[in-house]
Length: 225
Image (cartoon, rainbow, N blue to C red; front, top):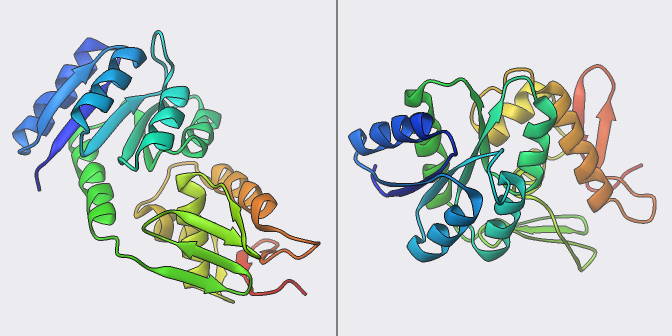
């Protein structure tokens, strides 16, 4: 697999390290060391993938991610600190497609990047509809009872997982695996937060299609009883 990658990371050593590994894997790679330069390069280069650090000078990674997500569907993988699990939730809510915890193995960055790119490139025009909820996967458009609902990329992916497995009990581990293609170390609380936020956005008139099965996981049903 090949393509263009923009690495937005203020630590020059890490940025160059990641760039070299992408180039060895056959990608062309550009580097920016602050958020504003990264935004300008993203707009000018239109890369196939962005590797984005959370903490950046001038324009932080969360705000930059939100801007990019409003302007394009470019896949974004966010780099976060291991000691800040709450930042992972914020990163996914801002529109990132995946996150990688520092310190990391550059080979993992390549593998996770290629998994995200395969997901994006393999996405076809498909509309999932259950009850009053409709999800256009390629456009990322979600409607509930005809009203459009704004969701983060992570929440759209999570909703798609639920809608592909209606009435099936899914554990946290299953949700993580089915939605993000790999395990998330210590991500249980984060997936609970994502489900809670999704529930708030798609619930209508006291009806909640995502049931909590205490001690087991979650189940998506067409209508809440």
